[in-house]
Image (cartoon, rainbow, N blue to C red):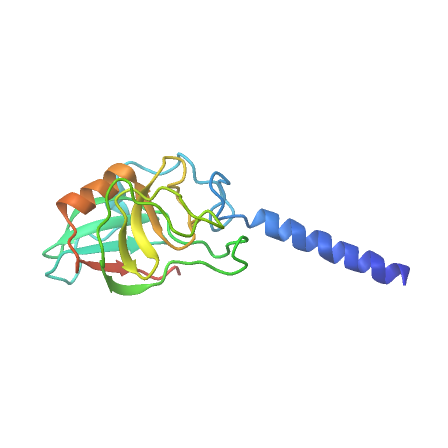
Length: 186
């Protein structure tokens, strides 16, 4: 009986350690997929992380969770790019994966500087999401405070970007119906 109690205690300790080490969706945690820290390590030139062209003649925002970059393409050519933080492989507060859905979507709405989450933080929401552009149900491109846009995937499913980048896309590039492509994680 004593060895069973010890084994259960060890299992519980292992699970707690695993959960705490995977708090990748918690702001300020610094964890990024792959176990490295991503604050202040990204190069300034994000265009080098993306293809200079895509096969499309319509305005398209491409999000690449592997390279942690977004690109705005017009007539198939990259016109602007920046850092992007996509959804995490695991969100402890939700008890499930919360990766950004991959595939092709369309922007459904365009928000202002005062856009806020209706869900996060749990239970009542209120997290700032300046210049939110919802493209897949509750998933949006949006601005986020510096320090929470990292070379990693730590969000609850939205695509975080620097506020100035979200503002540029919102007012200089996107319309309702603009295509958003989220590339695969692997």
